[in-house]
Image (cartoon, rainbow, N blue to C red):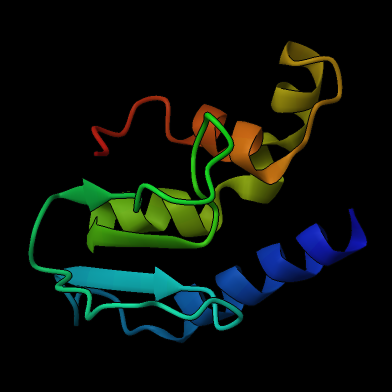
Amino acid sequence: MNNMIKEWYSVERVWNSTKPFHYKRLGLFRLDVQYQEPINISHGDAVVPNFQHFGLVNDRAFYGLRKYAKIWATTRFSQVEAQAKRNHNDLRAEAFLHYILRDVPYV
């Protein structure tokens, strides 16, 4: 849990370092993952790569339109209580992101 919370703070700090309206598309990638191929962030409005997802949503990368990237990057802390109640305190990263992105048309 401590590592996950550290990751959430890190993601929010990265988000807060972007200039509003400067970027139309963003890619948010964990630094502890070695990506085997180049990633073109111009494909898809909201993309969660299909690896390390354990049946739900990968928490290691996201890219797409700014409005969807903002949801991925900034709504974790505000949604903890609702997710914990809804899913019997299951705050695994993959399950939590699945809940957060429930209204995002990700592929």
